[in-house]
Amino acid sequence: MTVAEAFNQFKSELELPDREQSKAATAQKAIREQVAKHLYVANSFLAGSYARYTKITPLSDIDVIFVRNSERVGLASSGGTSPNEALVQLAEAVKKAYPSTARIEKQSRSVNVRIQGLQFGFDLIPAWLRTPDGYWIPDADDSRWIPTDPDQHAAMMTEANRRCENKLKPVIKMAKHWSRYNYDRLRSFHIELVCAAIFITGEIQRWQLGVARFLANAFNYVGRVMMDPIYGVSRVDKVLTEKEETELLSRIRYDSNNAVEALELEQAGKDASAIEKWRHIFGTGFPC
Image (cartoon, rainbow, N blue to C red; front, side):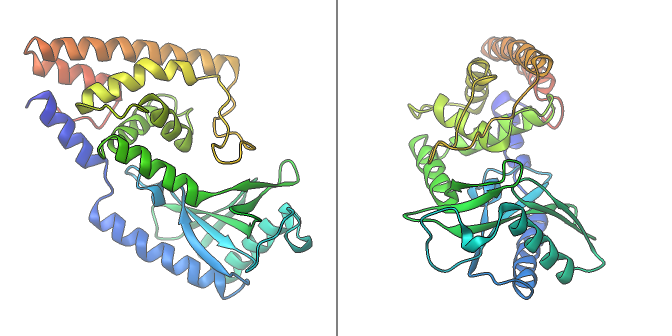
């Protein structure tokens, strides 16, 4: 097997299998319909990496936005509903919809739901239409409403992917796989924005070069605050302790050097050795 063949296989294996995709499609439709039977919902739609087609297997959670109003509001008042109340109302609706088969956990900005029989969960997010655009979503930790726009996020990533001739999203998935098995300290959307910034010129010649470039530049984004690119209000990066940051930076440097060595081995015609080096970088899941 050549390195190119190994990366093509890796790319395919990161995609959600048809069976898992079908099960997820049926389940997300069902939970949206069931929750709407117990709570006024003007509209609901998918958000997050699942909706942006940057989710990797195994599927963990699907983000679903539940829009609670039909007319845009200028202030984050949400009809007098507090951020915590919005989450409680949504959690109660889920409990009524799935009285004995759902495990429900109220989080700062969403309600996490695990339904019996499903290997993945849902992050359900209550939202209010915002003037002039976007949505208000709750931040219960700070008792405030924050603006967001999943539609703009999706459009932005679609454009970035187009600029890279549809090669950016596969590299993003590879970067997410690397992160998942190397401390898992980079948030999903953070990785997407970092990759979009790294590849802003739109040049990804080969998958292995894309991953190597990600590792060579990711160092610059660890410990650096990155805000939501639409409104600049909420952070998309995870706050790390000094120890966590040091460990992650050390791993990035180590794997960046390994990536350079893997490219050199491939250039020398030593594909088997190069593939073994990439397997070491990714931790697990890379073809042999």
